[in-house]
Length: 506
Image 1 (cartoon, helix red, strand yellow):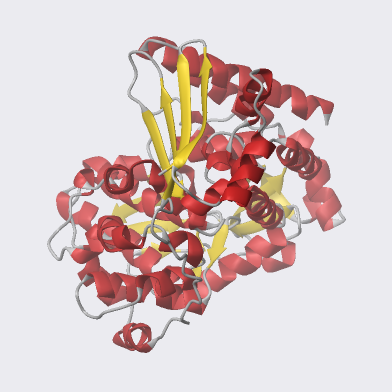
Image 2 (cartoon, helix red, strand yellow):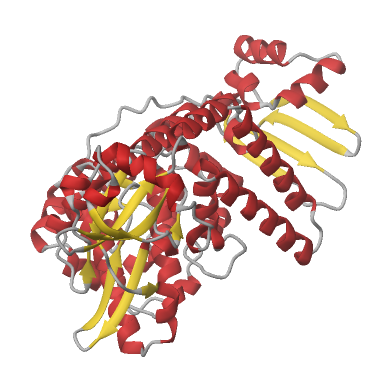
């Protein structure tokens, strides 16, 4: 565990260097240093780097998706022989040194005794223990910044990450998931490798060898072929999500290959360790929410978002903004013409609509929301890479049958029992926080007034310590709020060097 902590400390230093870098060249150097450290650490740090790489092949983190130096076969042989309980020569005619290393394991090309050419994914020796150590490290990390300020359920996020990593470390689980994708999905142009189940093990996965090139190579293909690939990508996501409720959750460039020939273009999907299971209730709610935005029906926004896993009481505070926010989030599926993903910036649109309260919306969401967001971010990055514009909704109707869409239309969300907050005359409606620094735009945060009852969980520790040094106490302030009620007034003002803090009820 000490070694893993050392890796994390080195990366923390690189993150700090990245934050203080004041030129693009300095930032690029810091990103490259961080990328190399993530590659060296493997495991969870490398997995984080692959998220940073996104779907592009042009960032400093791209090496984490296709050019990490593999370990020699001699180092991986014990894992294979332990899994198969025999020497490699009893199973294979030949096995090559790896040319593809990933965060948890690496892939070798092999020739089975029966003549089939296979890809053999082998887990790094000891990586499971390293991941367990890193999960304990993350468990010690305090909630800071928006995580603390907006009361994210940090433990739920940690548990989501832990569950996801546990599944990724179990190659038998991955084998079963891959078999499910192979049997369920029916998408033109999509290929999913068949597994050699009798050779699979918790640390070894064997599947048919697939030829192909990285998705980035398709950027220069003829337009018709790029559109065909884009349709396959989009139909795969929509069918996985809305029909089967099982979605590939790791859309980085190393997990797909493309090829074109006389029989058209083909997309091969790889690595099913990270997948997202979506219950029928949640996928019906999401589909109904999208259909409502298209003007097909009226819905109770809060009830439907609650079915998706959102905290209804939190959403009640921003209920008037939910229709416009939903329109921004689902705009590609609302407009029927070929959609240019370069014009879609849901994060910026949410910031314009909600300001800093966008964090309130995020904190109201379920812990696994970031996984679902990532797959849509992956799709938009893929479409941008292919430089195509295609209509989203017509393709969804091809991937999702009229019967399933009919089920979504008939589905009814369970009404939420939201306790209305009675606001009497003279009572504050909001808790306000304002941070002012010279030559910087003021940071203003607005929360429901009753959040003042939990002030000690909102105000960062360093600010609480400053309050104490200046003769104030956060617990006392919170108790006064409880005793005197939510009447408009200043709760405290604070100055640290040139930074001014003002917290009040309005």
